[in-house]
Image (cartoon, rainbow, N blue to C red; front, side, top):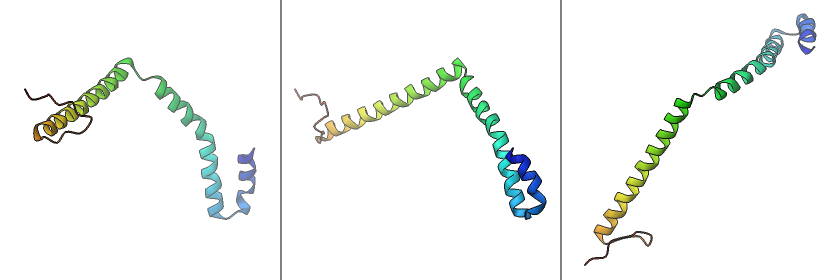
Length: 91
């Protein structure tokens, strides 16, 4: 309804306002299409894509644990461990 009124008043309005109204009308018309498209994309993620994403997350976590482990070992060797470090006791 607003679109029809905007078209009827178009000759009375300046060019800038008409352009703005036209852009708004296009945005209003295309919004449901964009929303449905986004929902379809999210729903169609394949199992292999989900597996790949999970694998990347697990590798990233494993790399971080490795970095933390190496840092802890370095602190233990240097004799400056943190209170939370588990250093082997010298024999």
